[in-house]
Amino acid sequence: MKYFILFLFTAISFSGFSQSTVKVVIHSKANYQGYESFADQAAITLERVLNSPNFKTEILNGQFTETNGLSNQMIFDQIMKAHEVNGQGGQNSVVDLRVRTMTRAEDGRRWMRNCRLDSWAGTIGKDGGASGICATCPQSLELWQSTSDTASLPAHYMHEYMHILGFSHYGRKSTSLVYKVGDIIEKLVKQGI
Image (tube, rainbow, N blue to C red; front, side):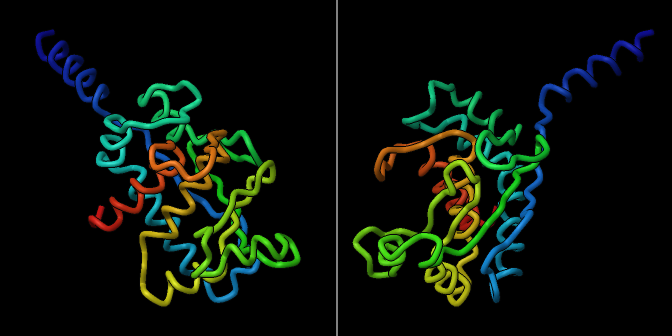
């Protein structure tokens, strides 16, 4: 009986420290010729970082604005639940990504001007609004792949995924949850997490 109680106490204690895990799946890639494996590696990297204790610590200790009124614990739980509110969605506990590169035909001249690396806008991509498709500037993809930058694409995917989860930002705010979560991903990847 004594050993059973000790076993039960140990099981309860360890279950309090467990963290749910999330998968990252890219369901489709449009216009990603030459970048398919780079995108796949970014998804693997993003999954590893999201499931790290470092990511949880960063979210729980972060200071954010534009949080939809959620506490840091609730934000972390929502990310790990991975229940998309925009786009096609998918299975809970799976970051369901659909990605494409931006094109003049689909996004227009203005967006493509903003994609230029020397643009005043500094655009690297955009969320697909209600479509839930993460769009990336082809110039950014080319730069990141050619310089072996393994942190920027997972960070970009996470920024856009936060929009798919229902978060938004008004302009480029350094304190905005959407931007800061992307920054956290980039920082942790660069730290080798």
